[in-house]
Structures are given as C-alpha cells and as structure tokens.
Length: 426
Image 1 (cartoon, rainbow, N blue to C red):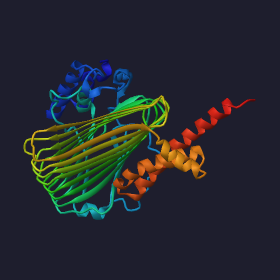
Image 2 (image 1 turned 90 degrees about the vertical axis):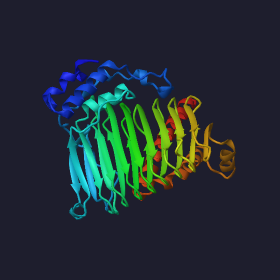
Image 3 (image 1 turned 180 degrees about the horizontal axis):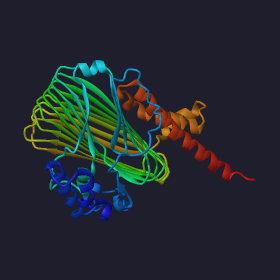
Image 4 (image 1 turned 60 degrees about the vertical axis):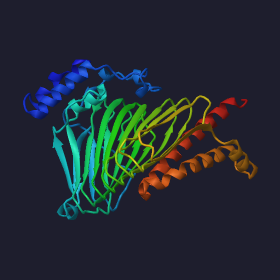
C-alpha cells in the first residue's frame, strides 16, 4: 500500500482524536495489513480482481472539483434530489412540504462502525476513507409518494471514491429511492456502500441504474435488513464499468418479512459484471424472490453467485432464486452458481440457472416471418429482459433501462455492419 492510503494521510483531514478519527485510523491500519482479494478464493472466483491496482488511485479526501452531467432520468414528482461527486455530497434539495412531514436528508461526517475480522481490504479502505455518509430518514407512519433521486457521479479523474448511503425507514412507512450511477470516461475506483433498514410493516423500493464509463472499477455493497411484515424491493440495471461488482445482503430479521431482488445486466467489449447475492432468512414465515437476467457479448464476462440461507429460526420460509444468461458471442462468458444452505426442514426453496446462446428456434420463427437477422436478435434479447422490467416499478427508470439496452444493441449492430463491410470484396 502506497502513502496515498497510509493511516497518517487521515490526520490532516479528520484530526487525530475522537472516536470516529480513531476508528478511521484502525480501519486504515487494517487495510494496510490485509491482502487484496484473490480470485483463488471462492468469494472472488472467476473475477479479474487480481488486475486491480489500488495504488494507482488516490483517495478523494476533499471536495471534488467538477459537476455531474445532466441525467436522462427525469422525475417531475421527485421529493428530494441529491448529487454525490466522487463520494462527496455536493447538493441536497428536499421539498419543504416533505421536510415538514419529517422526511430527513442529512450529511453525516465521520460516523462509521469498527472494522471486523470478516472485512476485506476493500471494506477496510471504505471504512477508513469514506468522508461522509448520506443519511435518508423516513419516520414512522410516513408514506412518501414521490421518489428520492440520488445522482452518484464519479469524475473519472484517477481518484478513489467511497460513496456511503444510509437509509433508515421507521415502522408503517414507505419510500422509493432511485440511484443513478454515472462516471466520466477516464480511470477511477469507487468502493460504495448502501445500508438500508426497513422498519416493521414498511415498504422500501431501491432502484440502481448503473451507466459507468468503461475505465471505472467499482465494488458496491448493498446491505438490507427487513423487519416484521415488511418488504424490501431492490432492482439493479448494470451496463457500464471495466469491472463492477455488486454484493447484496438481504437479512429478513422479522416474522413475515419479504425481499425482492431483480437485475438486468448487459456486458460487452471486455467488461466484467459480477454479482454476489445473499438471501438470509433469519425469522419464521419469511419469503424472498430473486430474478437476475443478463447478456454478454464480444469477450465480456458476467458472474453470478448466490446463496439462499435458511437459518435455524426460519421455519415456514419460502425462497426462490433464478439467474438466466444469454451469450451473444462465442467468446463471451457467463458463470452462474446458485447455492442453498438450509438449517430448517419446514421450508420451500428453489434455485435455477441457465447459460445459453440465443434460442435457434426463436430465431428461425422470426426469420421465417421475414424478420432480418439483426432485427431478430434485437427482438429476442429485448423479450428476454422484459420479464424483469416490471420489477423496476417506475416508468422513468424502465424507459432509461430500455434506452441503455438499445444503446448496447446499436453498438452490436454497428460492429456487425463494420465486420460485414470488411469481409465484402472490394
């Protein structure tokens, strides 16, 4: 580890004393001692994590200089908008009417937990160098009827950023959050955390639209706890980045808790999109349903590893996990590894995964009805993703996801056109 991430870098920015400063120091010391994750371990198997050189980046300790681009995601009914640049909160706008009802959007400086033995080097770096936490708080009984929009932008300026979002929702409440992740074209590293607490009998919807530049590396953790008779709905659309990894931990801790997880992803070029999911059923009569669908093209890769864990206290749990992948190129790869761990025999569980090229029967059907090959491919891929689209539950988000899939397919068509032109006789 270079001097960029040494513990003494923290002192001029955060001071040397106080509980949070001391925790930062301990986390930075732990990061210095820990090795980088390795693809030789089960947790990072198949990933290119060995290619990540953390020392090539510098931590963003001061306010970033730059602006986020205009977002194609437009919400007329947004109740709050937050802009984060390189992990630092640059703008907060909350509708005064909702503030009066108790909705709170605050920036916390310094608050963080102690590093633990299970943390990786990336976790320890986040605990040490995340400058702020954005905290969204919804009080008991408040049903927020418009989205909270978080625009999370990395400048692509060679910096390491550590965005941290905390969502706390009281009992019998409801909120919808949309996080739009973007970046510039240059290199960068983002180690991001989201912590979501869903109170009893509450509903939280959290959608992530990831459209990062092709030189950005990102490791993201989404940690959700769900209370009694509460519902968490998480939906992820992932399209960008050189290597992006999303780990989701859904802890169903209250009787009757429910967790929905959905993802749409499309990797092309030499991208790798990596997902690791945990569905923990820690209370009776809990349920979860996961549906991830992805496509990989060119020499790109996608990785899915998931675990349904029914704990001893999880009698009556009902859990499902499905991952399906299309390979659009002979040189593309997709790994899919679902797992079950069951400690109670009064449960219903299922898991399924597929990796396959485009169905030849579907293509033949379309070709026989006069649909040209390129258009047929587009129809099949669009139809493949449509099952997941309804889980985004927002017309604006669904429209943007459709647009991003269309961009990927346009690039695919353009590449095939160039290849066909190169093969044509002069």
